[in-house]
Length: 231
Length: 291
Image (cartoon, each protein chain N blue to C red):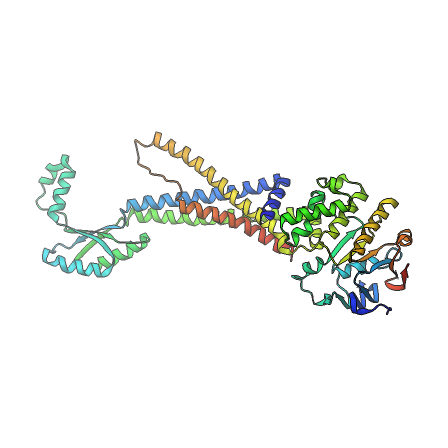
């Protein structure tokens, strides 16, 4: 499979396949991801990168195989337990997925509200994260009034505010200019340094080159084509 | 909880028109139901007063003598819960009649014999319906010392039949309006849910539980139901005050009509029912959407 010691694995995939109408989106994927790793999932459009992330946070169920997240078998997770699984993840999407009728502060605070945190803690934590991502002054703004880069920074803030152990980013820089894209990547790498496992799915090769450490998993036609360590 | 209330109010603010329509629909339904209840409460009270609170007059046979009275009283008491039992002899009744019809005394004086029977005026301790009095009266009538029992069975019985028909129509109308209000409420929730589909999807992605997602909808439903009920009752109160003051000004000199507003118990019951309506509409809608 690979040469990584599976003792510290936070994500494990065993012969995972996902089929849509009989056609493989993922085919026989086996993978171990260590805690604190930075994983770059690359490949052309339609290769199965997004599907791979989706099966991890159970937006899609696998057709075959097993997935373990921090020892939890996803096949056995009930719908009542699903929110608890999702709270382990921080998620960033290409289309940001921010609620347009809520302010920047409220969008980020949502994660902590859903987890049942106290309002005083939420206020403190959200402002701290917004400060880190440089969005503190725009806390009262609504997402549609922000640029793409700013919206993605809010999305990153929302992804990290709950201190998740895993951050999943699906084409996080897809709709951003180079400068904004690099800033987002830098944020993700920063959180990776703090101990979070980060999985970034992107077809942006330039982004890949600028990544200084981690592992690149190249996917093609739903299969792992190549795995390489990046220096 | 404060978060859900805040969220529900902000949703109501952003969907003002839709929520206003729902509150007005609930208010109208509650108004119709309350009008019927007001009518029934007052009618029941008026009928009760006509029946003098479970009173009946037991007319005794011609050959009745006073020494038979203790036995009669014992047998009647054994038949039911009698609160009061007053014996009125034929002489007393005749004197009373003469006093009441002072202008006709010549006619009464010319009568060769007293045509009135001995009687017992009775009042039941507790009774729930006219039927109960009727059944009790039948049992008394079956006693050999009793000639007849009068408890307003003629015109009052006929009136009660019409009243009961009215009651059935009222129930049907109330049920229909309840269903309409339920339909509108559940549709409002459905529209609100679809307008927030993206928000719900994002909430799920960030780990919100289903109860966290649903709670603001339920709070909004309870709010709509509560305020809809309150509005309906306020309209009814305003209408009642206008009508009752009009009646007292124009009709008071001709007839005595004591129309009272709904009892506190009934008002609380209506508010609770309308609040439940809001919640139930929400429950039905979410159950269908989220299944």
